[in-house]
Length: 356
Image (cartoon, rainbow, N blue to C red; front, side, top):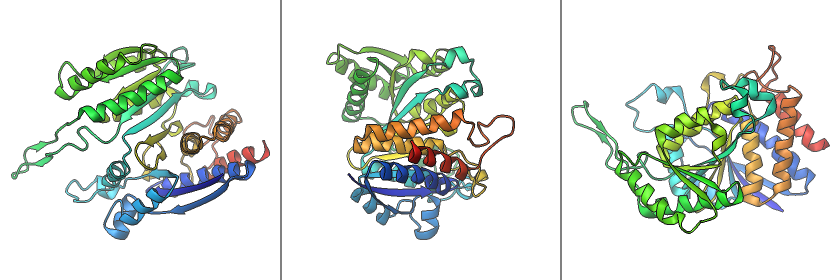
C-alpha cells in the first residue's frame, strides 16, 4: 500500500519525538512492504517565527493532500509568558482542527503492567483499566463568539456555543465505538447548570433510543472527574464537549503512570491527525530526554484508523510494551535512575519491529 503522510513536528520536543515515531513507521513499512512518502511542514510557534501564521496555508494544503497527519506538539514559553500576544501557537492547532473538520478527538486509555506502580492511584484501582475518551473538538468555548475583553481591560468573556448537528455527529460516533467495545457509553455534561449541556443531554437521549444494545449513562462533569480517580474501570466509552474533554483526558493520563504514554487520533471530515496528548515540554527541548512512546503509539493509531492496517498497529504496540518490559524507557518512567535517551528508545522500538 502507498502511504502518503504529512509530518508536522511543531515546537519544543516535537521534532525529537516525531523523529523517533518515524523510525517505527519506516520499520513497519519496510516489514510489510508498504511504500511510504512523507513531507514536513511548519505549525505552531516555529510557523509564526517563519511566516507570521501558526498554521500557514502551505501547511494546510499539504495536510489536505495527505492520507494522514503525524503531529508532534505546539507551544512556546515566549508566547505563554506574553498574554498580550496577538498571534499564539495554539491558534494554529485550533485552525487546523477547524479547517480539517476534525470534530472528534479519540484518546484510548490503557494501563501497562510495568507502569502500574508509577500511577499515584493504587494498583488495584487501575489494573485492567481500558476505556476511550471521545472529545468534541470544533465547538464549545474554544471557538465561541463573541470572545474578548472590555475596553478598560478589566472584564473578559468567552461564550460556549453548540448546535444540534455538532452534538449529534459526535454522539453517534461515540455510540459506534461503544458497539465495538463493551457496549457502555457515558455522556458527560453539566446539564444542571449550563444551557449547552442541557442541549447535549437532550440530543443524546434522543439518539440513545437508536442504540438499544448500548447501556447509556449520563454524568455531570464534576462527578466524572471524581469517578475517574475512584473507579476508572467503570468506564468503557466516554463522550463530552470540548473543554470538559480537554480537562478529563489529561486527568486520565495519571492512570497510565505517565502523560508521555497516551496517544490520540483526531478524526472528522478531511485528513485525520495523530498526536500524543502531552504538550511541547520546552524545558526538555534539545536534551534528548523526552518520552517518545506516546508519539510512537499515535503512529500505531495512524496505521489502524487512517489505513485500516491492524497488524501494523498491533506490532508497534507490542514493541512499545516490550521496551517497557525490558526497561528501555526515558527518565519519566525509568527505575533506579537507569534511563535511556529519546533516540535510544526510538532505536530500540524500531529494531524490535525490524527483527520481529
